[in-house]
Image (cartoon, rainbow, N blue to C red; front, side, top):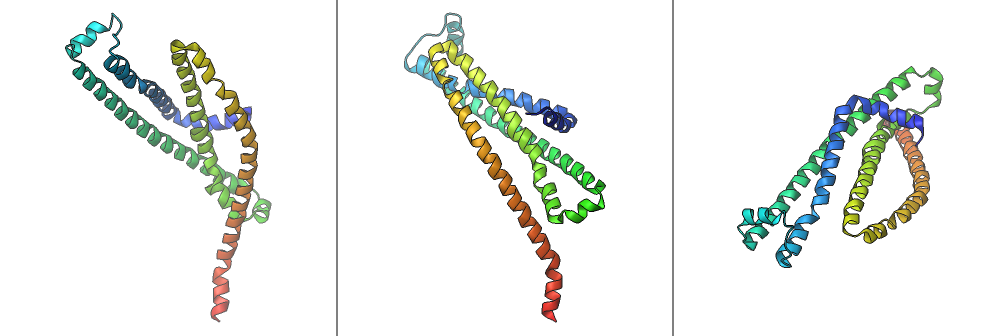
Length: 233
């Protein structure tokens, strides 16, 4: 990613530093909750079904909470798993709400700057540029900032952190399996690099066609009154 693009993107993030911090905290919370989700199943299988003992430091606490009753312990684990899922869903819902709200605010800021820039351009530009294309840039291309930040940077950073956390946990359990799990990363990267070029070219082509379609619609609707008037006469 080029430095001017990074600086340009950060200029839209600075007014929303508090929201970006909140999104980062919510992302870490979701990662932590995602890591904890398999543990209730592991506890049920290892310590309820297979009757494996806890660590000596934890066994007294478990016996004190459950009274040594495995049914009580199973109910507590199930309730803890349900509560964990509910918290995860609420965190995900709130994260999505803040993310969409912040993204829309950034889109509004970009549209405002684009509109000011269009107003400052000279007469030659407005003569040579179709009105439909200008409206398309304001309406559709302004979403690029939301796609870049909210659908690009944040998910990418979250995925890297999740991959690192999962690798560390898996390495503590079995280092060989942890290394084997990373063998898929080069394949995914190669696929991403291969399809990115094709997707970028096709996306640019689609945007060109959409822009021409909007231009055509503006021309048709602009002449609609005149055509209808002559047809009526």
